[in-house]
Image (cartoon, rainbow, N blue to C red):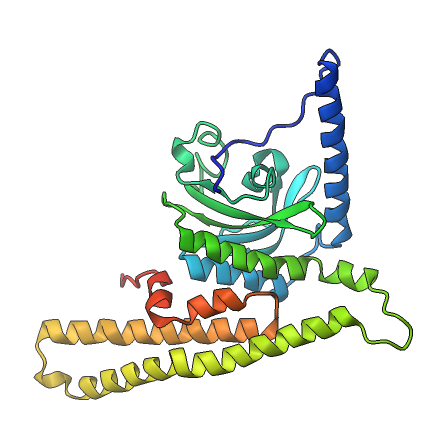
Length: 303
């Protein structure tokens, strides 16, 4: 289920509210207190976590064709983004202006197809002004105990629809983001039995080994090989370019650029996912299907 856009609003503090409303408000305040404690326990609010979380934002952007992506944590007053991708991607924003704050209302994906036409968001900074945000799609991240601590989101400056493939991609990568956001907390909470193996560490190592094996085997046979064949044949055609007409040469150049771009992006993806196992196998499997992966690359437009 995808939720309709709606600004997050602070709970009422009207002392004249009905008793049942007061009970609900108290329960909501307790849930928010637990959620904030879970956010603080990550140890990442106010911290630039570096490549291990930035890479998740980068892959979300590349896989969905979005220019901006964030891995966010939402605390009491602000949205802090330990993972960012994009020239205009902010590290933080006031919670009152945060789309991610609205996204954490429920575990369902949260989508704004065109913020400029959405009465809840149209007059907000960054929408009515630079960078003129239009599209937002976010997948809330929970801590395993029911606390929605943040969001993996992609943002675009053009209006878009969030199709099922985009939402599945965010859902898969949000699992990876959860692993990384909770990695430090998990290490602090870990209490292995004396003389025994740390089962969680063993499970994570096995996950890493499975992912590495998937990267090596699937990439070699499903992506690198056909791309190499395409590139070699393009180079053979280029060697005879003098006998081609202008339109044929232009098509050949476009094919060569597209193949080179796909090879570069696939190598980056493989390198990133080789470095961190985070439950991203399904996203990788889909990405390494050439016919699907190629659709996620934005066209290269020459100036």
